[in-house]
Length: 506
Image 1 (tube, rainbow, N blue to C red):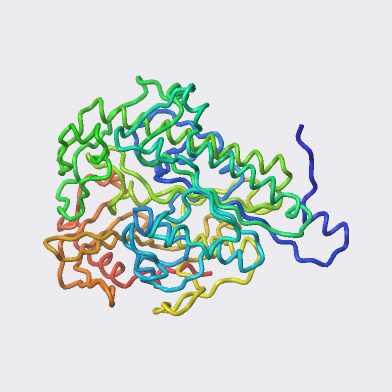
Image 2 (spheres, rainbow, N blue to C red):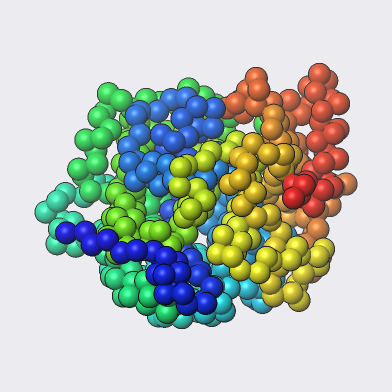
């Protein structure tokens, strides 16, 4: 039986206690989830070829959130993207471009989102994949948390390299729950633990739950296959690399090819090659099923928040750490600057502000989340970082999205920025990409690396220009098309000028 609890703010008001009422934060993350959700149907959906998707819990959360239809990550791979979001700074500030470097060692002693709320007196509790685990985060950045960090035990049982996907039978997962089920179980336990103090106004919480799926291997309860019958699964409609694409833009999707079932196919990973049709469709079906499995576990956590009477006093954010290529262009995984890699889901629920649901088509970035959560919690706004912020612990390189909660159609950023590193013959390259309302433009200059971390614009390895009005799937590179010369020059100047010139007028 559900028990009704009045909001903490209401209790404080009724008691005439002069205490500032602060909101809790539930911070939800999914790994490798592209915005292949019903709430994104339309021009912002990753592909025109898809089955009906099943994500009722994220659909429900979106109905009472600010849904960001066009949110972009700063780099499409786990640790750089997460580090950027969690510090509110871009990769050229964190100096994290791979799965090895730890920002506190190579960037600066930057305050993270959970660390910030810890400093504000919150219980800061993390579990699963929030930071990229291991040495890339100093093992989950211990300074960010007030409690011991939780990882699902026996994670390796479901994470072998033998199979890129597997539907787990009930007889197996009832004995050994899947990792995301274990995370949801732990999140529910934690919420029950923090609830009494949160409801009384005695202690706020910041609880971060990092789900592992739909990351490879696509492991999920076999029940979810029923949501995606084989006859609903189809091949992508653009299985070839973009016409005139520079070689440097391509990733050989080694992450997928490392699984033994894919390895035995002897796939080269080269442009304009593809995996067998049955393999492509099985992978797509498994990805959809893994996505729905994560949605289901996330829904259990959201329901517990309601049951405990905490929903009216808790900010909820959800994001996927980047997009994912699911055979479009013959490409897989992330590791590129293509739209499908850098476009990711994000939504933010602020009680009393977004309850009726808001949708914005304005361009936004993952570095915007940190200042948004701070403002939503009615804490002191973060200052904008100066050009060199290596010695500054707390500042932002994004913009609070709270104004969009007041007017989702207001004038906002005219461009957003992503990047991805490459190397060729021992030379470092950095692909810098700018996305405007109509275009994506990417240049691949040489890159100096430490200590300067600067692009070398005079050494160019390729350029890409995609017109999303006529080519939303980025099938034709127009960088060398004379008809686009003027717009290319404009975009080149904007890209090289950088993000500071595109801050919104707020």
